[in-house]
Amino acid sequence: MGGHSLPRDHSAYKAIAYLARDIAREHFLLVTGGGPGVMEAAHLGVAFSSFDSVGPLDEAIGLISAVPKAPILDELFTDTWTIKDEKLGAIDDARKWLKTALEVRAKAPEILPVSLAIPTWLYGAEPTMPFATHYAKYFQNSLREEALVNNSRAGIVYGRGGGGTMREIYQDVERNYYAKTLDEVTPMVFFDADKYWETDPVMGEARATTSSINVKAHHPPYPDAGPYIGKAA
Image (cartoon, rainbow, N blue to C red; front, side, top):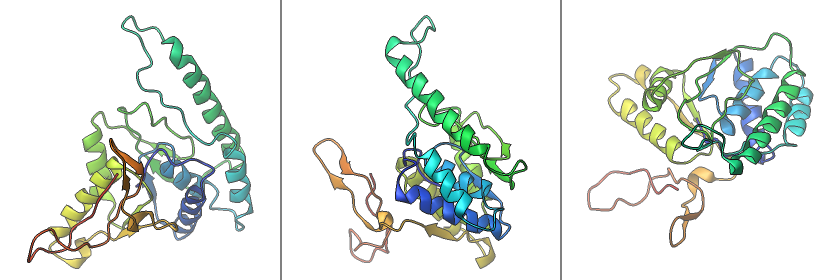
């Protein structure tokens, strides 16, 4: 799990790709929400996991980093279903983003290691990346997220993300809370070398000026309360 806004040239993108490669080589099925950012990095790692060396994956990350971010594709159309003039640049950027990914995909083995992507219909900010072998769709995003959380029984790795990732964390926490046996508990791995998951966001007048989520236990807000998940932005 993780956010769509993580750039391809960020160190956290490379770290997720490396981790996914290692997980795939241990024969786990990797499933993500199928979008850019953390999700793409995970499938990229799987796509290059059959190579004995990390060299091909390093080369792939270097190439794909030439187009670091997917454009925002929300609100593309006018009331008469023509493309808005101000969105033409975003469409061209989307072509470049996907073209670069397809060029990298061509350097992976012809038959990829299996991975599953479940992209959303909802967000224009999450175009589907091309590195999975199998794709599925839910018409409702809430059902998509619930399915991902409920069926990831071997564990969930959380890369850096925002509100959607935070919601998935709470869904996972709730499911674990009601688990009747230890075998029903989903391992939750908060993964980021830069302590993203241990840092409170810096708040400005209107919104957070730095994005982070602190999932470490804080002092409770009232006496005799247990630990609680901290601030998010």
